[in-house]
Image (tube, rainbow, N blue to C red; front, side, top):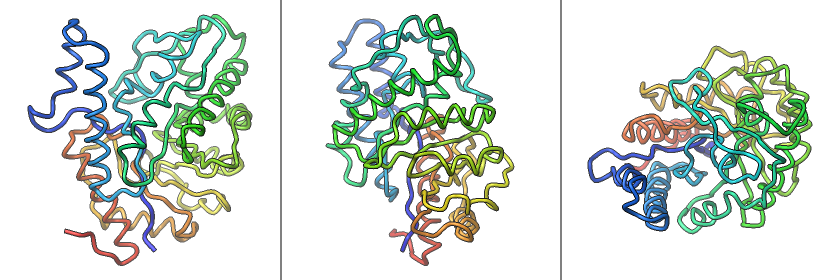
Length: 328
């Protein structure tokens, strides 16, 4: 049995040649008022279709919608939730990328349909298994620039968790069965692990495969605690920094482990053998049926050809472990 593979986060929006720059051109034209919102939406849809096709062509088992419409991790909710506005630009942790910090100026309210349209479109395109994705509550709360509504971090996190629960319910109603919750703050700020766990209790659903996705920072300080979160899987980045996680993966006795083995922040290409060695190391403590190999985070900021090559190495490495060959 081959180890399953998946992607985390956004895929590169801009392609290799001039003909693959249509989204960039469309955004500029939209800013100048030369095309309408519906016309821009058509370009977004076509780029989404192409991105999903590239992910599937690499042989990845579970794709997402490539997050082509996401300006950054927090933007889907910062744009659509009442009581929240996109705020100042800030560096995204220690990366050379930036995001708009949310500003909370009222009670957070949502109809739970912020991502339903995008998921529904992707479901009509994807030929393999499709998962949804949302930003995590602790990350959203701790990266907020200003909060004029809630009196404490705890109140803010739990309010965001309640709104997140509605978004999860909306995606479930739209047919989603798997949802990534991208929440790097859970490992970046281990002192808030208990607050994070309480937030996840607010939207736990035994009928869904929820994955708590962590990245950028080692899970070492909280790894055993992550095993007690009410989720079906936990994503662990083993590439960004030194970590002891490989020696402690047996903490996950029932959950799947989504192992970030392909470095999405580095243009250096992994080999299939390298990916296979990571998998074999993890298999000493995690049964093969509960191990999933993945990128560490979004491939978005890599050149498109590098992203494709990294996905190819990911898939070939997974098949090498099972003694399979990748079709030419």
